[in-house]
Length: 227
Image (cartoon, rainbow, N blue to C red; front, side, top):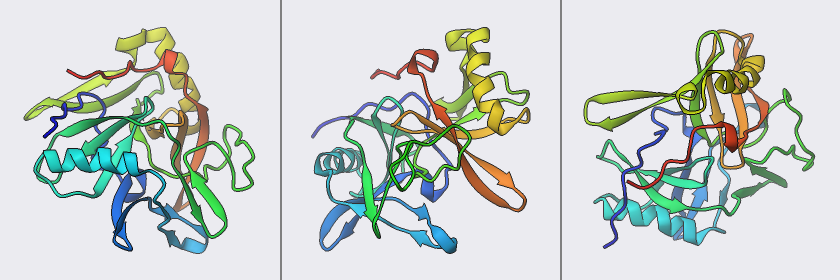
């Protein structure tokens, strides 16, 4: 049986159900699905059977680690497939997958691409209508740096700052783009495999997601490699 490395990068823990991909069984076959907040306060659950290789990658990890097939997984901005396993507090790297995930639902195409339902490009600052699956990062209070946390070993939490990877000045430039939407109070935002940056914003008593722009991987956290 194959073995898989522990992913020693940004673990997307404690996220909402709509911020992840999941595998479930439909009509006796595995499919990939998302949770999507649709129109008129509806919750949509589109699915696709078009990615058997990805389904196998994810389920191979879960089974190899003693778990059951199906369940949640993530794809980060480097197309790395990150898999949690029930009963284990670690996340594992299944490999990389770059084929775009798209979900057809009632005549609409839902994906993590920066497009509206007419397949027109989104502009920075416009409403994000794409899938919410993504990797969470935090803009610091003051809006000058970005970080994530992960557990390098049991009972240890490590904060990883962008400024420590690319320098204070460059990190501040990247953070300024996020701050333009989140404000100086900072907060969470998401990055997906299409390099889209989007964030939930509280408007009145409701949350809505805004599109911030495209990520430049040359000015970002380095890719996490196998160890």
